[in-house]
Image: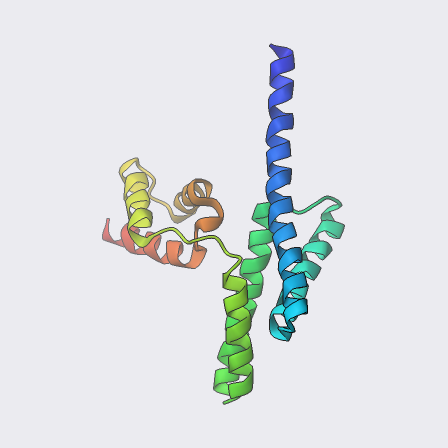
Length: 165
């Protein structure tokens, strides 16, 4: 029994390592393809992502897992949204186009978001189970949906649901 318990984590660790290599390898392959095609905007965006992943890996002294990579992509996407707002305010059509293009590239690496109806059902389920505070409810949603959860949307829906209760 002891040996089977030891073997299970090794298999799980191998799967997680394989998944992260797939995401990182996809980024590296896409970088090569973008460089060959001469798509400089895509090349620079992917290089920036890989640079952030490498920085994280140096900080934590291990390879980044898929969840960490998705968080980096989400953070970079949020930066593009912020820059897009400033570019629109300043009337800079060139920067608007640049940031929109970079945002589209980043979106292609994000997992599909949880559907609104599925999220509402999960919120209602947890409220019915007795969870009546934002913090524990958000944690439960994050545990359930992982990287597919858009925190901003979920927070707004949780607040609405709790205010109606």
